[in-house]
Image (cartoon, rainbow, N blue to C red):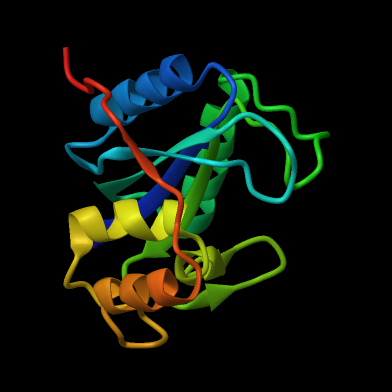
Length: 168
């Protein structure tokens, strides 16, 4: 029996942001029966000097298993012009990260689930709690809202809400 997986994806772009994000969302909505989209936030680039990013989180339900999903997401990034020769922290046409895969805890050389940046980056945590406020982090067992409150006390996020119209 094929299981249905609940997956949270972090989406970000700082090059042709609106065009790339709207294209990505349209692709997800046509590929998955269930697709819940958070608000989009603008945040300063992280780890390098560059244009501000637009970030959001999408919750999907899929029959993809983890590694085939990762491969498919990399293809989506590639068709949006992702340059894989760039350094880790650099400009991005489209960046798609698997944040959570069910309540799994997984790590190999390429993927860590849950994604560690959930707990340290407001541009990931805020849109995640917008669509899953009472959900608990699989490792800490604290709610994402609790993690947000802690992060804001230690390192307040500089996020601005961006008004995208997702649906035509």
